[in-house]
Length: 368
Image (cartoon, rainbow, N blue to C red; front, side):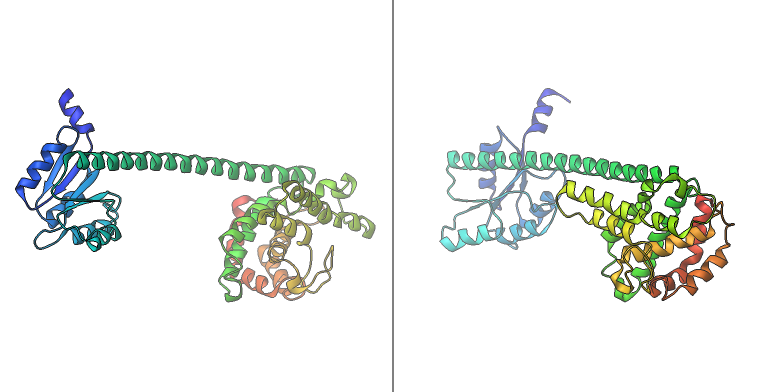
């Protein structure tokens, strides 16, 4: 590209729309030194040129034209997303106040009356080109900022996920029997929630935010086990009633850890609320015989009612030092038998409908 061509390519482009050849000649002669000009002698042609890339930087638009007047051209320009942002200056011999008002209402940025005074025309054109350039710079800056915010948000979410898994794995390393338990239950509980969302009573409650928070916080359900003594946590056999009372406290330890995080944050955060519900209440039972509070029915948080089914199912099919693993069919029967006593009936019904998906998850992540 020659230097002259490069300079021309860098000039802003102005579309001149007028049905009078003398007016076009005058305008192009005035604008030619600073701007690259495109010309249209009617509204239809103007709309076609304006919608063709590269788009004009500014449009000088006559109002009184045959077939389609300038007002209609401007209306169609503003209705098209591709041309809506191009500034329009009306050029006209019409000087009534209503004419000018109508032009601004249609989206024009300025209104110049004929006969044209060259210094006034150039001053206004230069001003609106400068404003258009400033808007584009601002749009680019906003886009860059949005991309940076999106990138940082992604990194923060990824860091959050990594910390959750690290914390959950800390409990897992102290309990060799759990293996892939936290990963399986994370996927189980999401599938159960998706299935329950299809039930009318839960469609609104189980929105995308609920699903996201549930999936992310599910690995924390047994984080409180880090506070249980090794002699009890790693005991190769069934616990005595006294030992089981101590084991139950893992729900309180987990709850307290999340509460401490909430206090540090200082503002409500649904993510932590869900984590607190799961850690504290996933051993509650529908009939009120669970722990640590003895909650019953709908008083148990929904996240914990979902987690209860996922947790018990995985415990049943997993091998432990004190028991052999159950088959998927045996575990499914126990979940069904616990409907309305141990488990929320609605969640147990969902389990019965989708238990083949949970069996596939168990195979995918391996049984302990």
